[in-house]
Amino acid sequence: AFDITTILLEILPDPRALPPQESEHYRPTLNPRARLDDWYYDQYFKKEYKRLVALNKKRAFDLVCELLLSFRTHEHRDQKEEQHKFEDNSYIPRGAIEDHEQNHDHSDTEDVLIDAIRDIGIEILKENPGSIKELYAELVARKWTVFRRLAFFLLAEVAESAPELVAQELTNEEHFDVNDIEHEYSRLMRAGFKLLSEPQQKTILGWIDEAHHISEYLR
Image 1: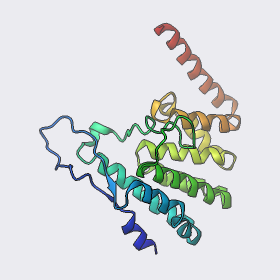
Image 2: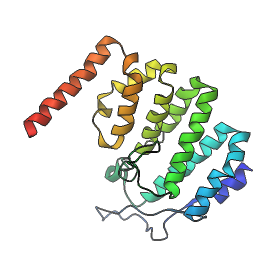
Image 3: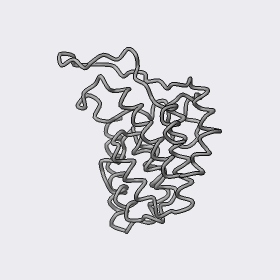
Image 4: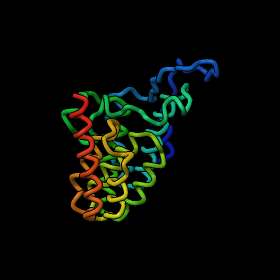
């Protein structure tokens, strides 16, 4: 069943895609597509895919992660890594991983895949909150910021099950005040700030104070 589903849900490259050319400094993002149109793709996940989730949640999770990775890879296939730096600007059309008024009102292939990763991840964590470390590592290993956002979202769901991981990510200054991941970082902050040690809390409060002073100076 999984093999057939993999073929059915496969992400295909934009037919406009051209082989990368060394001489070009800028190449636009492309529009990958699925075998099914957006409406049928959405319906398949809402109905048929749930049967696979019931059979094997982790395998279903991994498959959808690979589909989203394929989507992102095809989208940027004509760009070099130094151009995109794995920053996908996913926060622009989708301001939040959860259902939120910030999100644009559409259900395209990318949104469907993000929803599926989120929802299956939640199901896995309900059964075994301790599996967050494995899920988190697998998500961030895929590098694109949308996977980091999904990782933050799921970690916030079970923050008390992984306090060391929460502390590690919240006190990483590279994540602080970054547009691409700001919403999910803030959500993780709300769930996990209380789990930090006093020195860790002071570190973050210092960043906030510094950012406030900079914004006041720039006014």
